Amino acid sequence: MDDLFAGSLPAAEPLGDGAVLLRGRAGADAGALLAAIEAIAAVAPFRQFTTPGGREMSVAMTNAGVAGWVSDRAGYRYQGEDPLTGRPWPAMPAPFAALAREAAAEAGFAGFAPDVCLINRYRPGTKLSLHQDRDEADLGHPIVSVSLGLPATFQFGGLARTDPVRKVPLVHGDIVVWGGPARLAYHGILTLKAGEHPATGPLRYNLTFRRSG
Ligand SMILES: O=C(O)CCC(=O)C(=O)O
Ligand SMILES: [Fe+2]
Image (cartoon, rainbow, N blue to C red; front, side, top):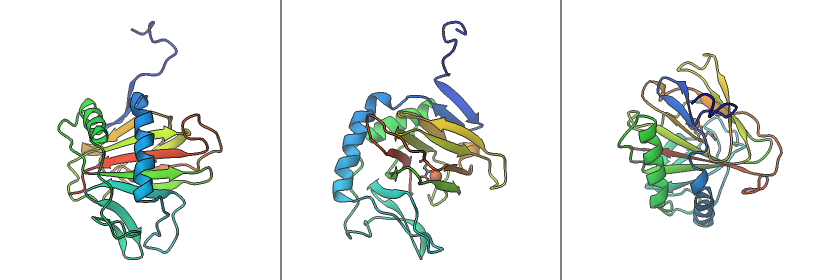
């Protein structure tokens, strides 16, 4: 085994108890995912939310599913209507949910049935500061995170903001799953470097599949 895979990175790399990087796991679905992102964004455009503190986020976001993650001066929350259009968010494509379910099962979280997908769009110079995903009603469900396009450095820490942070390079097609003891781990994305990716040009997309309620 060791000889056969000498020089290559492991397909599944644990990032701690309850967290794993599944390298390239979404690669075969990348084209379909990008086409679906385009269709979703035609109905629910990418926009930069304002934080409760009044700052505009650098990353642009949209959602698909029964609800969407939103932020404004009133706080962070999930809501059934897109605040930009007043209409329901576009449905989550069934193949998306299936991919997330399979990746979760491979990470040890069988039976995951996501009902929302938050879609982030990063341009060079944008970042997502260290945070916890904690707006979901039942933290018993994992997070399944799919990276597309330009590479990025994912920070993955512990349950306290001040815990040491591991820097994990993420590339097109990678999936990270975290749940159980890692569900409230602090994480973020360092400032995206300039680049050009064959599938996305000067952009990185991230999809996080979640169970909102
Ligand atoms: O872009 C990423 O890889 C992480 C996204 C994230 O943490 C989030 O949307 O909450
Ligand atoms: Fe997050």
